[in-house]
Image (cartoon, rainbow, N blue to C red; front, top):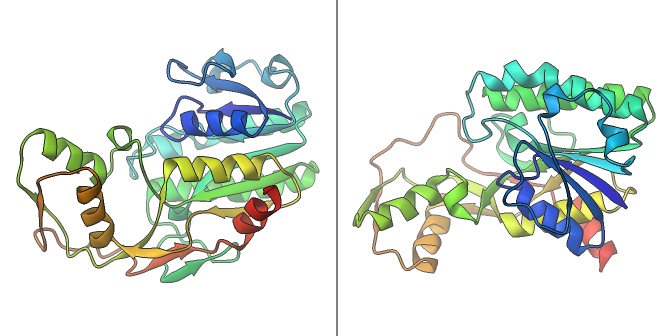
Length: 277
């Protein structure tokens, strides 16, 4: 199977390219720069939004495109999310019109917005950040477009990712930086919120197995399905990395738009992973 991966040099993309190669796929890696991408992949350095519309042919008529390219993914209220939306839509619809039969796109639980409990493929979406709004709009538009063109669509919804932490701009990145700077305390919230954490390597493995098959489609939650309190996960991270830092609880208020508990339904991804064994 030949897989075109956009955003191949990104935080998640680099891990996914290797995971796809490890499950036997031929990978065409595409990004602005590809210096950190697995050398086993065919490489195409280019700006997707400036492509001439012939990428499908130039990439060797891939069986599936995994679209992971996205600017400012860690800045949830960047104006680029809505500014780039039409460019993402134009790029993907061109691929499908060129002959692409299956499209996989990286989504996010932020499409859902405030929700308490488990998220499944039928959970209503009411996003409250520019990132979530743009991803949700792309998801809705591509569902409609792909149905009209008989193109299979997989929407791979990610949750709270850690691992490779110097590159993910999260609280875990900030903890490592604080440790490097010799700080002994770290200002924190109450830490009571429960999130669905997954390591980037496990996420990449789930994505690779989802893309390497075409029987399970639609919205697929790529996650652990196990809500863990933020404080528990951060304390474990401090222990795992031997950081001499104590959390200063309650310095920052919990954000009013964060759910007290949120996690993904793993039924589809477990079906995929169990079938691949």
